[in-house]
Image (cartoon, rainbow, N blue to C red):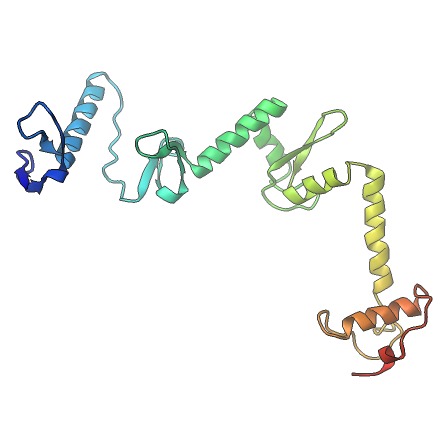
Length: 233
């Protein structure tokens, strides 16, 4: 069964028409595509008559959607979703939504505006205040006084939190790493660290044996080493 659409002049199946119980055949007068175009044209004309700005989005290709925040055509996969809307999409692209959420969080938590956050970022040259990684996204603060400090990357921000923001613990951790690096590094005049031969590959079977021998030479292993450690491969 087909029906002719008086707008486009095509003979189309009944599935291409909407429902209208007031008409004898129970189908809408125009096909779905023509009816949609006519509704859009009426809406634009109505908005113009009210003095509103009407944007032409007809140039946007399939699979893209206009983002009113950044004013760009954005691919569907980069657009937020909203099951409560007819289109299934939200009102912004994902990057714009993330920026808006971040701005709202900074203002809600620290009462800082976008301009103030931008000033902090510019003062740090958009780098983490500890490690220098580009694009830090976490605003650090003193957990005791609540005073705002600087922007940090995720690793540095989490590191401070895991070490309880304690300067003594942080210094002890730095001393710990440096001490063990010095102990594991062979002297400049003895690349073998007291043992002959070159340093084995880190993943090779002799690497653990090599480290054990260094520990024994440094006096940190009290028990005698097994004889098989001294047998060359």
